[in-house]
Length: 137
Ligand SMILES: [Zn+2]
Ligand SMILES: [Zn+2]
Image 1 (spheres, rainbow, N blue to C red):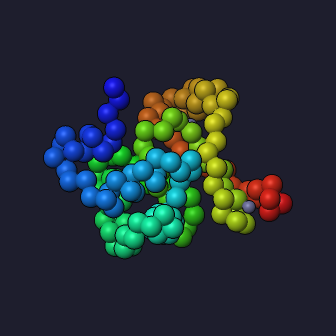
Image 2: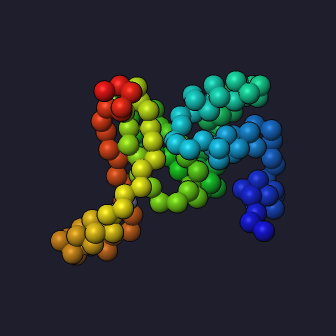
Image 3: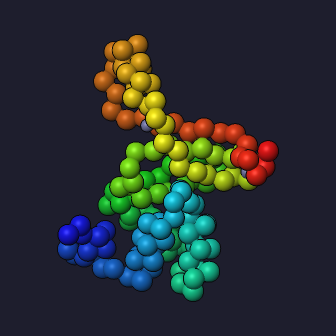
């Protein structure tokens, strides 16, 4: 059986507050990165009234446990997503700020090229595309 993040945290002795489990569940069920403000708003919408300070505190906790990653997609706000998602990138609409996950089929070729051109041993990379989404075009 695959242990959930909540079970894992419990077995490490961390307390699972309703805010903590609500934030983990929300991030698990959101298929794209979201900001702390969106987390706050979405929780309110489903009747979990957590104040924004708690949201930020929980985000710091989840980052420290490596359960979530932070991503800088805009200059303004950071976005967060679950760390255990399969490898992907993002495409961002500069008009409506929509964010979608993106898988790139030819990625291996790109990485091979970078490795052979630079002779670096690449440990990680990030790749984000910016443009105008079909709805805003
Ligand atoms: Zn990649
Ligand atoms: Zn758009």
